[in-house]
View 1 (cartoon, rainbow, N blue to C red):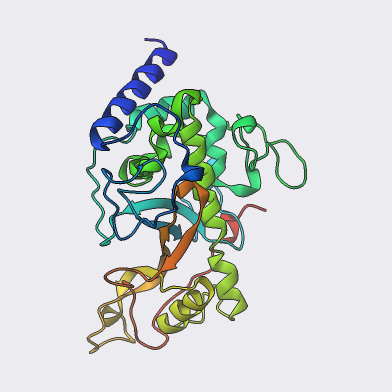
View 2: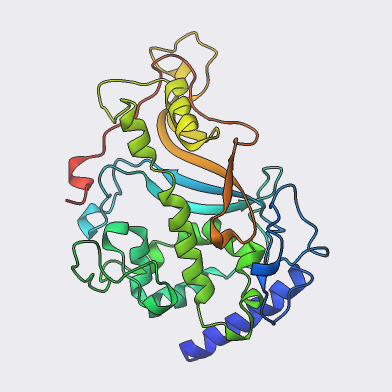
Length: 320
């Protein structure tokens, strides 16, 4: 079967599923500019508002980042950018903080694989220093070269399928946001416009949360010799972002370490991720968000003084 046929079928299926999942969507232009900019949380009833103009499903929008010290695929050219946390995704949670990872309606892994394999440069959205947009006319805020003006060559690394496990688990959930549904684009919809919107929107939110810089400005820098305290890390990011983020840790539990023997602190001890929570006015794509405190638990990390490692990345893992 030709790729174009597969994509066409996938798009038609997506439209049909979206119309079933979100009552009130239509294939006409949604003039959101004249609609009231309602807040995504508390949840809006999709029968009472235009779901294309106000988020009615995943109203709690999370911008999630990872802190990694290596990729494991350095020999294949996968390196980390310097002095920055990496982008994990933009997640649409319910307003109560719950996320359903088995929801219907978003593009399948195979559909995204076809899209990326036929437009290999989409993968380079993952590294803003190498950003390249194959359809710049759809995305005026993204250029086909980094700031130094050097055109980015097409991607020639390992098979794309090795990179997109997270799409099926998390990032495809972004299409569950009602404002990204294809019917919302009306009769002038251009193929993959929603996909490009997704990348642009995710990057827009990511750039608002420079975690590395915020911590560094407060004197909290990666170190293989000096440990840090959760209260300092979370407090710094709370002050900078305007709300309490979730801080995630991995590695041994504090009471499993020599320093924590006899302690009741079971938190993990290696800093690995940060989640920033937002409510959104109007369309998620517009980025008119309000920072809100993390729902439920605010950390999986140990709380003891000096219990956390914020490790330096491996030198050979950093892109020069």
